[in-house]
Length: 283
Image (tube, rainbow, N blue to C red; front, side, top):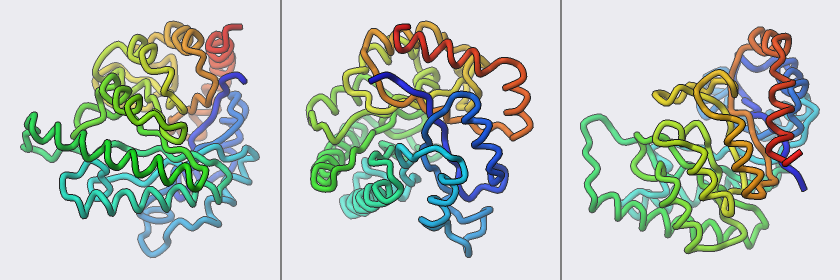
């Protein structure tokens, strides 16, 4: 097996409704999609929830199979929540997300480890330890459900303004302790770049990585730029993936307009991504 390029499939967002958008991502070399739906509703209308049919139709229009689902997230769906009732609610939602992923054809769900820290809230060491314990409990329950349903859950390393989950090494340790084939890491290289050099962070986590989000930034904000448009060292990252024998999906989590995508194609982005993928596969 070799690593492959994938793309986000943003369902229910007016800016990406044109099937040509996914067509351009396919032209860039992508061969599968991760469904990411508008939680508010189609076009931001709460009266029009995004349905499973909407998701299936969107994937079909893009002419690429679904490999996974980006699970719903928010402070109301926090698997690290100290409140046990709220934590269980989040886990129950993620179990349903696993069922949905299977229905879409991609038996993997990306899960955010925690919610965003509210303004003026100080996270103490005591709260952080408690939240890691709660996340560990949630992850173990999802691993058990994953084994039952044959779906995998990928915990995503997050930007530093979340309660927990931004420390790649700590997340790796948690996954090593649970050691389930139905549980792994979604390594987000851009999130890691907000805290540290993402290359050694990735090198130390490849054995638990089952999915990868790729996009770029300048180390200050989660900009979701195309690779090669920020300050991430992409050749070094490709080498780390190759040395770690990563052979899963490298999913472009980017949201350019259709016009920007067409311009990037004309400017040779496909050739750069092809070279990156070849290097990640040691070719």
